[in-house]
Amino acid sequence: MKLIADCHFHTISSGHAFSTICEYAKEASGKGLELIGMTDHGPQMPGGPHIYHFHNLSVIPDIMYGVEIYKGIEANIIGFDGLLDTEEINIEEMDIVISSFHGPCLMPSTKKENTQAMIKSMENKYVNIIGHPDDARIAIDYTELAKAASEYGVLIEINNSSLKPTSFRQNAEENYKILLEECYKNEVYVIINSDAHIHTDIGESNEALEVIKKSGFPEELVTNTDILKLKQRLGLRRR
Image (cartoon, rainbow, N blue to C red; front, side, top):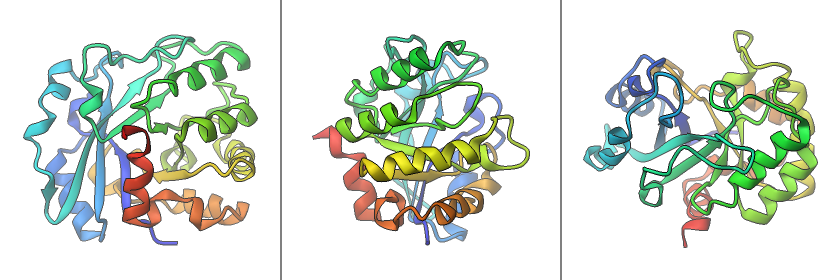
């Protein structure tokens, strides 16, 4: 399975990442990627970018080094009602809005409340990806999450960074096996992303691809294997 895009990575603007958009684009070009999505953390993440960073995304070229650049945000869920830290940001102008649960922005609660937070965030029509729902420290009901993703047309991310031996997230591989089974039952599309914090990791997805292979998850439900399929699924709720 060949991936043609990587739609989750962080630049130096996120505060704890180490590369610029130019470095990412050049690296992606060398690896044969057709599209990358820049998704720096929302402003509630400690050390994260000021809202002006997102207001000024239009200055970034649409194509760099022959690679198409999508501009977006990894928004933080900041309430169990699904509230995101995007109230002062024009997310309707963004190509990608990832909704993610991060402990520094919202302390995990019960499985019911954690799941509710993710599902309620999907009610925001500009959210098109749920980021790394894989950490055992943030218990999630994967049956309910997959059903909601199917209803709202939201992509579920298979996060390669979570699957690395160095990851701080817990039990990601086992959790993805369960989640992928639920996604298959509900015909939910997934997207494989690197969650890179340095440009050399852009497009690196071996661990995620191995989990997909072991689970027998069908390639037709993996969104970023085809550029037209990717754009169609990302734009589904923008219409």
